[in-house]
Length: 391
Image (tube, rainbow, N blue to C red; front, side, top):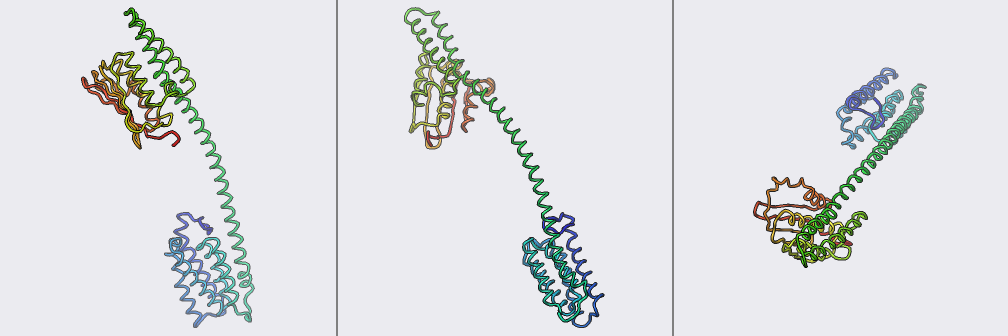
Protein backbone atom coordinates (compact mmCIF):
# COMPACT_ATOMS: atom_id res chain seq x y z
CA UNK A 1 0.00 0.00 0.00
CA UNK A 2 1.48 3.34 -1.11
CA UNK A 3 0.64 6.81 0.05
CA UNK A 4 1.04 8.52 -3.28
CA UNK A 5 -2.30 10.09 -4.22
CA UNK A 6 -4.18 7.85 -6.59
CA UNK A 7 -1.91 4.87 -5.83
CA UNK A 8 -4.25 3.09 -3.40
CA UNK A 9 -6.22 0.13 -4.66
CA UNK A 10 -9.54 -0.98 -3.19
CA UNK A 11 -7.85 -2.98 -0.42
CA UNK A 12 -5.55 -0.07 0.37
CA UNK A 13 -8.53 2.26 0.67
CA UNK A 14 -10.07 -0.05 3.28
CA UNK A 15 -6.88 -0.48 5.31
CA UNK A 16 -5.33 3.00 5.09
CA UNK A 17 -7.54 4.59 7.75
CA UNK A 18 -6.93 1.94 10.44
CA UNK A 19 -3.21 1.65 9.55
CA UNK A 20 -2.51 5.39 9.80
CA UNK A 21 -4.58 5.61 12.97
CA UNK A 22 -2.50 2.81 14.48
CA UNK A 23 0.76 4.51 13.43
CA UNK A 24 -0.36 7.79 15.02
CA UNK A 25 -1.39 6.12 18.28
CA UNK A 26 1.89 4.17 18.35
CA UNK A 27 3.93 7.34 17.87
CA UNK A 28 1.94 9.08 20.60
CA UNK A 29 2.42 6.15 23.00
CA UNK A 30 6.15 5.99 22.26
CA UNK A 31 6.57 9.67 23.12
CA UNK A 32 4.68 9.17 26.40
CA UNK A 33 6.88 6.18 27.33
CA UNK A 34 10.21 7.74 26.35
CA UNK A 35 9.46 11.20 27.67
CA UNK A 36 10.79 12.50 30.98
CA UNK A 37 7.38 12.02 32.53
CA UNK A 38 3.96 12.89 31.20
CA UNK A 39 1.37 13.90 33.73
CA UNK A 40 -1.15 16.56 34.58
CA UNK A 41 -2.35 18.80 31.75
CA UNK A 42 -0.01 17.17 29.23
CA UNK A 43 -1.61 13.80 29.93
CA UNK A 44 -5.04 15.34 29.29
CA UNK A 45 -3.89 16.58 25.87
CA UNK A 46 -2.49 13.12 25.12
CA UNK A 47 -5.87 11.52 25.92
CA UNK A 48 -7.73 14.09 23.77
CA UNK A 49 -5.31 13.45 20.88
CA UNK A 50 -5.73 9.69 21.26
CA UNK A 51 -9.51 10.15 20.98
CA UNK A 52 -9.15 12.48 17.95
CA UNK A 53 -6.88 10.21 15.86
CA UNK A 54 -9.40 7.34 15.25
CA UNK A 55 -11.73 9.78 13.49
CA UNK A 56 -9.52 9.15 10.48
CA UNK A 57 -11.04 5.67 10.02
CA UNK A 58 -14.53 6.80 8.88
CA UNK A 59 -13.15 9.97 7.22
CA UNK A 60 -10.48 8.43 5.02
CA UNK A 61 -12.76 6.71 2.43
CA UNK A 62 -14.72 9.97 2.10
CA UNK A 63 -11.76 12.35 1.89
CA UNK A 64 -12.35 13.24 -1.79
CA UNK A 65 -16.00 14.15 -1.21
CA UNK A 66 -15.39 16.16 2.00
CA UNK A 67 -12.14 18.15 1.60
CA UNK A 68 -13.09 20.65 4.31
CA UNK A 69 -13.61 17.87 6.87
CA UNK A 70 -10.19 16.52 5.91
CA UNK A 71 -8.64 19.94 6.39
CA UNK A 72 -10.34 20.26 9.77
CA UNK A 73 -9.15 16.84 10.85
CA UNK A 74 -5.55 17.56 9.88
CA UNK A 75 -5.73 20.95 11.60
CA UNK A 76 -6.79 19.14 14.79
CA UNK A 77 -3.82 16.74 14.51
CA UNK A 78 -1.45 19.64 13.88
CA UNK A 79 -2.84 21.66 16.79
CA UNK A 80 -2.45 18.68 19.13
CA UNK A 81 1.13 18.15 17.93
CA UNK A 82 2.03 21.82 18.45
CA UNK A 83 0.55 21.88 21.96
CA UNK A 84 2.28 18.64 22.97
CA UNK A 85 5.64 19.74 21.51
CA UNK A 86 5.34 23.04 23.36
CA UNK A 87 4.96 21.07 26.64
CA UNK A 88 7.55 18.40 25.86
CA UNK A 89 10.04 18.25 22.95
CA UNK A 90 9.78 14.48 22.96
CA UNK A 91 6.46 14.81 21.10
CA UNK A 92 8.39 15.97 18.03
CA UNK A 93 8.30 12.26 17.18
CA UNK A 94 4.50 12.40 17.16
CA UNK A 95 4.58 15.60 15.09
CA UNK A 96 6.52 13.70 12.40
CA UNK A 97 3.46 11.48 11.99
CA UNK A 98 1.87 14.46 10.24
CA UNK A 99 4.24 14.19 7.23
CA UNK A 100 2.95 10.97 5.67
CA UNK A 101 -0.57 11.82 6.85
CA UNK A 102 -0.45 15.10 4.90
CA UNK A 103 0.39 13.40 1.60
CA UNK A 104 -2.18 10.66 1.98
CA UNK A 105 -4.98 13.09 2.82
CA UNK A 106 -4.25 15.95 0.40
CA UNK A 107 -3.28 16.28 -3.25
CA UNK A 108 0.46 16.67 -3.85
CA UNK A 109 0.47 20.47 -3.96
CA UNK A 110 -1.44 20.92 -0.72
CA UNK A 111 0.43 18.03 0.86
CA UNK A 112 3.71 19.98 0.62
CA UNK A 113 2.07 22.99 2.26
CA UNK A 114 0.77 20.80 5.09
CA UNK A 115 4.22 19.24 5.62
CA UNK A 116 5.86 22.67 5.67
CA UNK A 117 3.31 23.97 8.18
CA UNK A 118 3.79 20.92 10.40
CA UNK A 119 7.58 21.20 10.42
CA UNK A 120 7.59 24.96 10.93
CA UNK A 121 5.00 25.11 13.71
CA UNK A 122 6.53 22.15 15.54
CA UNK A 123 10.00 23.74 15.55
CA UNK A 124 8.60 27.10 16.66
CA UNK A 125 6.65 25.44 19.47
CA UNK A 126 9.68 23.53 20.75
CA UNK A 127 11.38 24.85 23.92
CA UNK A 128 14.62 26.34 22.58
CA UNK A 129 16.18 26.35 26.08
CA UNK A 130 15.44 22.70 26.74
CA UNK A 131 17.90 20.08 25.60
CA UNK A 132 16.03 17.76 23.24
CA UNK A 133 17.36 14.29 22.45
CA UNK A 134 19.47 14.12 19.30
CA UNK A 135 17.13 11.66 17.60
CA UNK A 136 14.24 14.10 18.09
CA UNK A 137 16.13 16.91 16.34
CA UNK A 138 17.25 14.64 13.50
CA UNK A 139 13.73 13.32 13.03
CA UNK A 140 12.28 16.83 13.08
CA UNK A 141 14.61 18.14 10.39
CA UNK A 142 15.33 15.12 8.22
CA UNK A 143 11.89 13.54 8.43
CA UNK A 144 9.98 15.98 6.22
CA UNK A 145 12.87 16.29 3.75
CA UNK A 146 13.29 12.52 3.36
CA UNK A 147 9.59 11.92 3.05
CA UNK A 148 9.14 14.71 0.48
CA UNK A 149 12.03 13.29 -1.56
CA UNK A 150 10.53 9.82 -1.40
CA UNK A 151 7.13 11.15 -2.38
CA UNK A 152 8.47 13.04 -5.41
CA UNK A 153 10.42 9.96 -6.53
CA UNK A 154 7.41 7.69 -6.17
CA UNK A 155 5.19 10.10 -8.09
CA UNK A 156 7.81 10.43 -10.85
CA UNK A 157 7.97 6.65 -11.16
CA UNK A 158 4.22 6.49 -11.47
CA UNK A 159 4.28 9.08 -14.22
CA UNK A 160 7.07 7.20 -16.01
CA UNK A 161 5.00 4.01 -15.95
CA UNK A 162 1.96 5.94 -17.13
CA UNK A 163 3.99 7.33 -20.04
CA UNK A 164 5.13 3.81 -20.95
CA UNK A 165 1.52 2.61 -20.94
CA UNK A 166 0.49 5.64 -23.00
CA UNK A 167 3.17 4.95 -25.61
CA UNK A 168 2.05 1.32 -25.83
CA UNK A 169 -1.56 2.44 -26.22
CA UNK A 170 -0.57 4.90 -28.96
CA UNK A 171 1.27 2.16 -30.84
CA UNK A 172 -1.74 -0.12 -30.52
CA UNK A 173 -4.05 2.67 -31.72
CA UNK A 174 -1.77 3.29 -34.70
CA UNK A 175 -1.98 -0.39 -35.60
CA UNK A 176 -5.75 -0.37 -35.24
CA UNK A 177 -5.94 2.78 -37.33
CA UNK A 178 -3.94 1.12 -40.09
CA UNK A 179 -6.29 -1.86 -40.01
CA UNK A 180 -9.33 0.43 -40.16
CA UNK A 181 -7.85 2.29 -43.13
CA UNK A 182 -7.23 -1.01 -44.94
CA UNK A 183 -10.76 -2.21 -44.24
CA UNK A 184 -12.21 1.15 -45.30
CA UNK A 185 -10.25 0.90 -48.54
CA UNK A 186 -11.62 -2.59 -49.16
CA UNK A 187 -15.15 -1.42 -48.33
CA UNK A 188 -14.71 1.52 -50.67
CA UNK A 189 -13.61 -0.76 -53.49
CA UNK A 190 -16.62 -3.02 -52.89
CA UNK A 191 -18.95 -0.04 -52.81
CA UNK A 192 -17.46 1.28 -56.04
CA UNK A 193 -17.98 -2.09 -57.73
CA UNK A 194 -21.59 -2.10 -56.57
CA UNK A 195 -22.02 1.45 -57.80
CA UNK A 196 -20.68 0.54 -61.23
CA UNK A 197 -22.97 -2.50 -61.31
CA UNK A 198 -25.93 -0.25 -60.59
CA UNK A 199 -24.79 2.25 -63.20
CA UNK A 200 -24.50 -0.47 -65.85
CA UNK A 201 -27.91 -1.89 -64.90
CA UNK A 202 -29.59 1.51 -64.89
CA UNK A 203 -28.08 2.63 -68.19
CA UNK A 204 -26.62 0.04 -70.56
CA UNK A 205 -28.95 -2.81 -69.63
CA UNK A 206 -32.08 -0.72 -70.06
CA UNK A 207 -30.75 0.90 -73.22
CA UNK A 208 -29.85 -2.42 -74.81
CA UNK A 209 -33.21 -3.88 -73.79
CA UNK A 210 -34.93 -0.98 -75.50
CA UNK A 211 -32.82 -1.45 -78.62
CA UNK A 212 -33.66 -5.17 -78.81
CA UNK A 213 -37.36 -4.42 -78.29
CA UNK A 214 -37.43 -1.79 -81.03
CA UNK A 215 -35.48 -3.98 -83.46
CA UNK A 216 -37.98 -6.80 -82.99
CA UNK A 217 -40.82 -4.37 -83.58
CA UNK A 218 -39.08 -3.02 -86.70
CA UNK A 219 -38.76 -6.54 -88.13
CA UNK A 220 -42.51 -6.93 -87.96
CA UNK A 221 -43.27 -3.46 -89.35
CA UNK A 222 -42.75 -1.80 -92.69
CA UNK A 223 -42.91 1.61 -94.22
CA UNK A 224 -43.04 4.67 -91.94
CA UNK A 225 -43.55 2.57 -88.78
CA UNK A 226 -40.37 0.61 -89.52
CA UNK A 227 -38.44 3.85 -90.10
CA UNK A 228 -39.76 5.27 -86.83
CA UNK A 229 -38.66 2.19 -84.92
CA UNK A 230 -35.17 2.30 -86.45
CA UNK A 231 -34.86 5.98 -85.57
CA UNK A 232 -35.72 5.10 -81.96
CA UNK A 233 -33.03 2.41 -82.08
CA UNK A 234 -30.47 4.97 -83.22
CA UNK A 235 -31.56 7.36 -80.45
CA UNK A 236 -31.34 4.65 -77.79
CA UNK A 237 -27.91 3.57 -79.07
CA UNK A 238 -26.57 7.12 -78.90
CA UNK A 239 -28.00 7.62 -75.41
CA UNK A 240 -26.59 4.29 -74.21
CA UNK A 241 -23.18 5.16 -75.58
CA UNK A 242 -23.23 8.49 -73.78
CA UNK A 243 -24.38 6.87 -70.54
CA UNK A 244 -21.59 4.30 -70.78
CA UNK A 245 -19.02 7.06 -71.03
CA UNK A 246 -20.59 8.88 -68.09
CA UNK A 247 -20.64 5.71 -65.97
CA UNK A 248 -16.95 5.14 -66.61
CA UNK A 249 -16.15 8.73 -65.68
CA UNK A 250 -18.49 8.57 -62.63
CA UNK A 251 -20.39 11.64 -63.82
CA UNK A 252 -24.06 12.48 -63.66
CA UNK A 253 -26.57 11.01 -66.15
CA UNK A 254 -26.23 12.63 -69.54
CA UNK A 255 -29.63 14.39 -69.44
CA UNK A 256 -28.60 16.16 -66.22
CA UNK A 257 -25.44 17.58 -67.78
CA UNK A 258 -27.31 20.02 -69.95
CA UNK A 259 -30.66 20.23 -68.14
CA UNK A 260 -32.15 20.58 -64.69
CA UNK A 261 -33.88 17.67 -63.01
CA UNK A 262 -37.48 18.63 -63.94
CA UNK A 263 -36.54 19.01 -67.61
CA UNK A 264 -34.54 15.76 -67.52
CA UNK A 265 -37.53 13.87 -66.07
CA UNK A 266 -39.85 15.38 -68.68
CA UNK A 267 -37.47 14.23 -71.39
CA UNK A 268 -37.31 10.77 -69.83
CA UNK A 269 -41.11 10.57 -69.67
CA UNK A 270 -41.41 11.62 -73.31
CA UNK A 271 -38.86 9.03 -74.40
CA UNK A 272 -40.65 6.21 -72.53
CA UNK A 273 -43.97 7.32 -74.02
CA UNK A 274 -42.46 7.29 -77.51
CA UNK A 275 -40.87 3.86 -77.17
CA UNK A 276 -43.69 2.10 -75.35
CA UNK A 277 -46.85 3.81 -76.58
CA UNK A 278 -47.91 4.32 -72.94
CA UNK A 279 -49.36 7.67 -71.87
CA UNK A 280 -46.63 9.01 -69.52
CA UNK A 281 -47.21 12.33 -67.81
CA UNK A 282 -44.73 14.41 -65.80
CA UNK A 283 -45.80 16.98 -63.20
CA UNK A 284 -43.62 19.28 -61.08
CA UNK A 285 -44.89 21.09 -57.97
CA UNK A 286 -43.23 23.50 -55.59
CA UNK A 287 -40.07 25.53 -56.19
CA UNK A 288 -37.81 23.46 -58.49
CA UNK A 289 -34.49 24.83 -57.24
CA UNK A 290 -31.31 22.91 -58.14
CA UNK A 291 -30.33 20.18 -55.66
CA UNK A 292 -26.97 18.63 -54.88
CA UNK A 293 -25.86 16.60 -57.92
CA UNK A 294 -25.96 13.32 -55.97
CA UNK A 295 -29.60 13.94 -55.03
CA UNK A 296 -30.63 14.76 -58.58
CA UNK A 297 -28.81 11.71 -59.94
CA UNK A 298 -30.56 9.51 -57.36
CA UNK A 299 -34.04 10.81 -58.23
CA UNK A 300 -33.37 10.51 -61.96
CA UNK A 301 -32.18 6.91 -61.59
CA UNK A 302 -35.21 5.98 -59.46
CA UNK A 303 -37.56 7.46 -62.05
CA UNK A 304 -35.66 5.67 -64.82
CA UNK A 305 -35.87 2.30 -63.07
CA UNK A 306 -39.53 2.73 -62.03
CA UNK A 307 -40.58 3.67 -65.57
CA UNK A 308 -38.60 0.75 -67.01
CA UNK A 309 -40.29 -1.68 -64.62
CA UNK A 310 -43.72 -0.30 -65.44
CA UNK A 311 -43.00 -0.52 -69.16
CA UNK A 312 -41.76 -4.10 -69.00
CA UNK A 313 -44.02 -5.67 -66.37
CA UNK A 314 -47.05 -3.55 -65.47
CA UNK A 315 -49.00 -3.67 -68.78
CA UNK A 316 -50.12 -0.16 -67.90
CA UNK A 317 -51.99 2.26 -70.11
CA UNK A 318 -50.95 5.32 -68.14
CA UNK A 319 -48.00 6.24 -65.91
CA UNK A 320 -47.89 9.40 -63.81
CA UNK A 321 -44.57 10.87 -62.69
CA UNK A 322 -44.72 13.63 -60.04
CA UNK A 323 -41.78 15.61 -58.65
CA UNK A 324 -42.66 17.67 -55.54
CA UNK A 325 -40.35 20.24 -53.93
CA UNK A 326 -40.75 21.45 -50.33
CA UNK A 327 -38.54 23.22 -47.82
CA UNK A 328 -37.22 20.04 -46.21
CA UNK A 329 -37.72 17.15 -48.65
CA UNK A 330 -38.16 16.40 -52.33
CA UNK A 331 -40.64 13.67 -53.30
CA UNK A 332 -40.75 11.58 -56.44
CA UNK A 333 -43.88 9.51 -57.16
CA UNK A 334 -44.20 7.09 -60.08
CA UNK A 335 -47.71 5.62 -60.28
CA UNK A 336 -49.11 3.30 -62.96
CA UNK A 337 -52.51 1.70 -63.55
CA UNK A 338 -51.10 -1.68 -64.49
CA UNK A 339 -51.78 -5.18 -63.28
CA UNK A 340 -49.89 -4.69 -60.02
CA UNK A 341 -48.44 -7.45 -57.89
CA UNK A 342 -48.08 -8.71 -54.37
CA UNK A 343 -44.64 -7.45 -53.24
CA UNK A 344 -44.06 -10.55 -51.14
CA UNK A 345 -44.91 -12.92 -53.99
CA UNK A 346 -42.53 -11.18 -56.38
CA UNK A 347 -39.78 -10.99 -53.80
CA UNK A 348 -39.79 -7.24 -53.38
CA UNK A 349 -36.38 -6.02 -52.35
CA UNK A 350 -34.61 -9.04 -53.81
CA UNK A 351 -34.70 -8.03 -57.49
CA UNK A 352 -31.75 -6.04 -58.72
CA UNK A 353 -33.96 -3.15 -59.90
CA UNK A 354 -35.77 -2.56 -56.62
CA UNK A 355 -32.63 -3.18 -54.60
CA UNK A 356 -30.73 -0.75 -56.80
CA UNK A 357 -33.33 1.96 -56.18
CA UNK A 358 -33.39 1.27 -52.46
CA UNK A 359 -29.62 1.44 -52.09
CA UNK A 360 -29.37 4.61 -54.10
CA UNK A 361 -31.96 6.37 -51.98
CA UNK A 362 -30.49 5.14 -48.68
CA UNK A 363 -27.04 6.40 -49.66
CA UNK A 364 -28.38 9.98 -49.69
CA UNK A 365 -30.28 9.55 -46.38
CA UNK A 366 -33.62 9.12 -48.14
CA UNK A 367 -36.46 6.60 -48.01
CA UNK A 368 -38.09 4.45 -50.68
CA UNK A 369 -41.45 2.70 -50.57
CA UNK A 370 -43.20 0.47 -53.12
CA UNK A 371 -46.95 -0.13 -52.85
CA UNK A 372 -48.85 -2.47 -55.13
CA UNK A 373 -51.84 -4.80 -55.18
CA UNK A 374 -52.93 -7.22 -57.90
CA UNK A 375 -55.10 -5.29 -60.35
CA UNK A 376 -54.56 -2.03 -58.47
CA UNK A 377 -51.42 -0.72 -60.10
CA UNK A 378 -48.10 0.16 -58.50
CA UNK A 379 -46.81 3.28 -56.74
CA UNK A 380 -43.14 3.97 -56.14
CA UNK A 381 -42.32 6.80 -53.74
CA UNK A 382 -38.81 8.19 -53.13
CA UNK A 383 -38.07 10.90 -50.59
CA UNK A 384 -34.72 12.67 -50.24
CA UNK A 385 -33.60 15.68 -48.17
CA UNK A 386 -33.99 19.02 -49.97
CA UNK A 387 -30.35 20.08 -49.86
CA UNK A 388 -29.95 22.86 -52.38
CA UNK A 389 -26.88 23.16 -54.56
CA UNK A 390 -24.40 25.41 -52.83
CA UNK A 391 -26.27 25.03 -49.49
